[in-house]
Image (cartoon, rainbow, N blue to C red; front, side, top):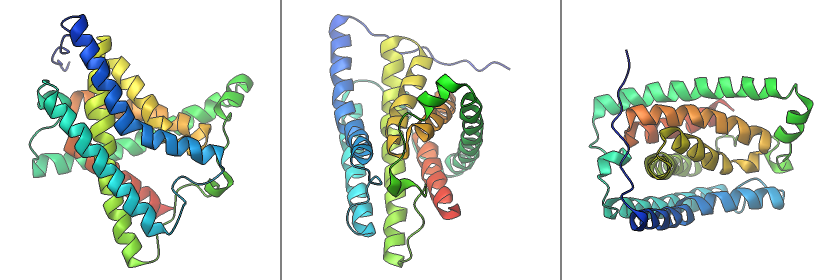
Length: 249
């Protein structure tokens, strides 16, 4: 059974294209640059991303940044003239969105497993192996994902941060960037691939091996969004995926 998709919104003329490109630049600066810059600094200065200060301060600042990004980008989307439903912002439906979130989270685990296997296989090719391992993770990140905090207050802030961060990243990467990039290039898969590359740039502090895995898995998640196109289940699945990975570490 084939699934039909609505046509991409047209780019009407050169002035419209310039407006969309300017809007895209603003969202990249607001919604992508803070994460990407923090990840690059983590590599340059050999530290774990966000390792400064006590753990509760990391989660408080992360939550504030996520709120700042979410409100700014949401305002741009509402003022853009594009129907917000086209971005995937639709009324929340408890049963539908919760079930979708669980299914999407399972798919995220499947995509992560498959992408890990694909990258491990590509490493058998010497030239690709050198590229895949081009950037080593900082020593501070040698342990991988952060372990859950011991203090109840820290744990509460971690939960708030993961929910806020999941919502913010899905709003920027999936709802806005995937949609706008597909519209500007006229091809949905261009939006899927480019938004996956941007998402993987957030994780370069984990090293290029991990960033490449994330890139491949995010292509799968982006393809799911093209068909589901609902913000809420992807935001919840994102937060649930991160929390379960940390809890299992």
